[in-house]
Figure 1 (tube, rainbow, N blue to C red):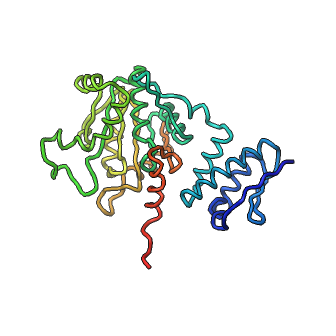
Figure 2: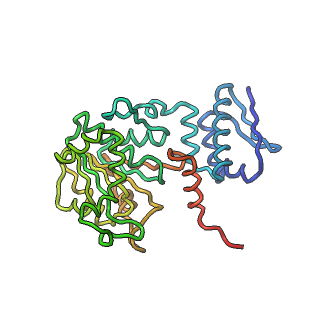
Figure 3: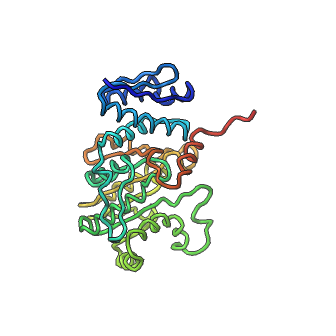
Length: 315
């Protein structure tokens, strides 16, 4: 029987780390088959040598997450346990096959690995999570991989033309100039995976298409990889219209952040509505990414957490 001890700073950190009704603690105990308890300001872990070492490592990582962000979610616990125990290690390191041979794109967290695996195994995937979790970037990479391997013949990238405080009519220029700001994030991702001339040629040949959501009406897309970005900014009827464009041999990925809804007040988001409606359909998969999957600048996690906390009360 082996035992390890981990010092704690305060009781509040302990409550956050163990979770509501000790749900985080139970997850760690069940995953590693160890005993975990708190006594005299320390966390004690006991059991067989390897499980104790793994559980201790997982708790230390979660403790650091609490110290950095002030909170830890159940998804964070699940992903940390997976990293430490090695579960899902293969998908996490499996690269996505794009045209730039010198550049490798691969999932960088267990959550991202689950997302990429879902795209490869399902025809309709919804990805929900905060900014910086790679929802759009990985979807574009998967589309490029499918095009390169001739799984599909066309990539269609779509965005609703809705942004906070702006509408197309207020922007100067013709239609193409007006829609460019909305489609720029998709184009930026694409240009990291293909040469500029190749992107330009494919767009001229209509192999790659980037359009506002409204221009999807009345179409049927066969053998296409269709990406809807910012899906939280669709209405229920718009989401239904978009999803029913799916033709034979096609697949769809919808990404969005339900905390950044720019729809008018009291308008139900097509993203949350669709996830609820479609959950029992064969071929559908919803993946939820969390703050633990943020891979942008180190401050992005802290920024997301600060906004989730809401405004502080003035004294």
